[in-house]
Length: 279
Ligand code: ADP
Ligand code: MG
Image (cartoon, rainbow, N blue to C red; front, side):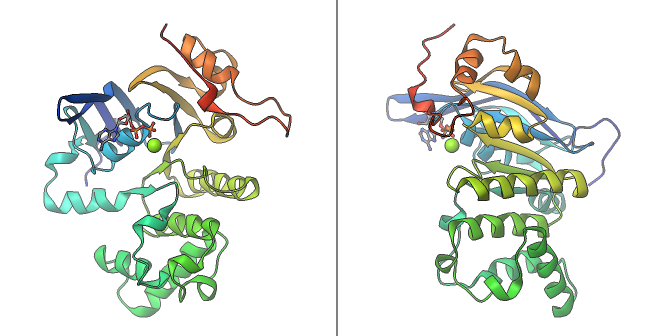
């Protein structure tokens, strides 16, 4: 896909999503604008409490959900109108990592199959040896080896191994952008640190940008370049992560940030305790 100078990697404009169910309707996204330049690679955090529209935004960018209004452009092209070859390129270059990828894997197949399918679909290797090298390389990026996981089924791996595998599969495709929807919400603290560290390395050594979706601002503080605070489908504040967290301007951001745990291991940050009734 041609990348003309100045065209951002990703541009979300006026994104509005209304879910309708009978007489009820929910505005999950309300006129969201978001630009990721792609060069240099950055980690952009989307932070907000449960129900604020984070997953809807992620699914929209991944092309899984159609907007009610607005557009998502990848390298300047509306993702809903990509010609076939550009569509394949977008599919390869924009990858997803979910909270727990267990659900997306067919339990019948071995882990090897997940990698084989990706290699075949995107024609990444011309023979079995090249395919094997690609898989080993991808696994090594997340600190794993093929003989540990490839002949196992998804349920035989730990949650942490499955999560690292998902990152390895994404990396295998040499993406430009990884949309990571709460990738570390279900893993323990040591594994969380490891996965966040892998994300930083992928950004710095492989020029992969991330849309890092989280309800946990403390992890955003550790890795995020920019942050957008999402509240009821609207971005109420955005900017440099350190600036926003150290000096929030919007009253909702202030409330969210005041609930980040102080460095006391006995105090657990609980966003469900956050209640906000407007400006
Ligand atoms: P988050 O990921 O921040 O928790 P979501 O994007 O999942 O938020 O949801 C945003 C809002 O949209 C919520 O009110 C949710 O109930 C609603 N919603 C999400 N998906 C659907 C759907 N498929 N049908 C109807 N409502 C939905
Ligand atoms: Mg979600």
